[in-house]
Image: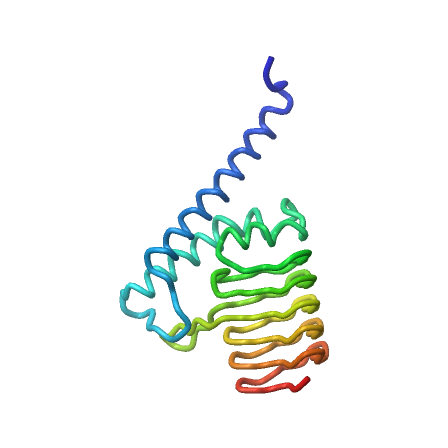
Length: 193
């Protein structure tokens, strides 16, 4: 009885990987429960509570999960489940080909496609200050390959953000809008429906 020795190594790696993801998700959720990070600014130069919690969550997300989630071990159709466990709100049939940093700041609707290597960032750093901001992506939105979505952005239903586009902080993109490939959408911009 038992696992054939030829598969024992593979099974051990699989069990270890699931344990790392599970423990990381558990610790991340506890940190969010004990000391939830909120939208806004804080300094990282001084050991403040916010800076320490943010750094720890970033470490857990980037180092423990990147190896597993942001590779081909987890199919794009299942990444949303893990991000939901980490605190994101991701709707049905979302295909996550890119990376979500600060999952607890991200809300994604139904039938959304995040293209390969796109980056959805809940933070930005300027000098010694971190800005955290929510990102809301509506239903049936497509974010192209290698696009970057910065914090405090709202993207309306049916919108397409082209490959390689950069959406800076404090942007609202209306329903059904189109952001061209390679475009830079500057801060404090509103793109109407």
